Amino acid sequence: MKTINTDHKHILITGGSGGIGIELIRVFAEASDHVTFTYRPGEDSRRRALDLVERFRDYRVEALALDVGDPESHAQLMQSLTEPVDVMIHNAGVGTKTVERAASTYKGQDEAFFRVNAIGPLWLSEDLLPRMQEKGRGKILFVSSVDGGITHFPRFRAADGMSKAAVAFLGRQLAATLAYTGIDVFTVCPGATDTPMFQASTLQGLTPEQRRSLETSLPGGRLIEPREIADLCFYLCRDEARILRGAVIDASLGLGVCPAVMS
Image (cartoon, rainbow, N blue to C red; front, side, top):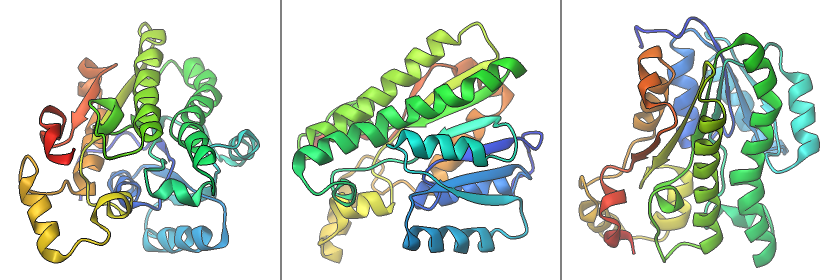
C-alpha cells in the first residue's frame, strides 16, 4: 500500500475498467484519494464498472458512464460529478483492433480514433480547466502511446498513431498555455503493455512460444505491467514532479528508441 498520499484529491480517470485504468484506480484509492472513473455506456461495461466499485468498496471509488467521443455524454458527466476535479487522467482510448467495437466501417473507425483518443480529451480538459484555474492548481495527464507519441510502427493503422500523436501535441499545447499557472500537464507514452488493448492488437492468436519470442525480442525482454504505468502517473501527481511539467514521457522500456522490433 502507498505510504504517500496526494492530500485526498479528487481524481477523475477515463477508461477505468481496462488494464492500466484498474491499476490507476488502485494506486490512487490506496492513497486515500477520491477516485471517479468512467466506463463506456452499455450494460456489459456497467456491470464491469460496478464489479470494480465493489472490489474497491473499502475506498472512496465511484463510476460514471462516458462516451468519450460524444459531447452530450461529456455534458452529462460534468453534471454528475460530485465535487471539483483536482487530477484529470485521460486514459480511455482505442487501438488498432479495439476500434472495431466503436465503428463498423473503416472510415468510421478512422474518425473514432480521433474522437476517442484526441478530441474527447480536448473537450473534457476544456470542461474542467475553468475550475482548476479558479483554484490555481491542478494536474492533467494524457495517456498516449509510444506509437504516435514517440515514434511510428507501420504494422499498426495510420489513424491510430496519428490520433496518439495528436493527444501528445495536445499535452504540449496545454502545458504551454498553462505554463504560468499552477496547473501541470504531462503526457505518458506507454510501450508494449500487458493490457486488453495490446492483447487484441498483437498477442491474440499467438502461441505461447510465439508470445515468448515476441517478449524476449523487446527491449527489456518483457512486457510492461499496467501497474508500472499507474505508478508513474501517481508520481507525476506529486509536487516534486513539477520539474517535468509539459514533458512527453517515453514509458516504453526502450521500445521508443528501438522501434524496429515491432515493425
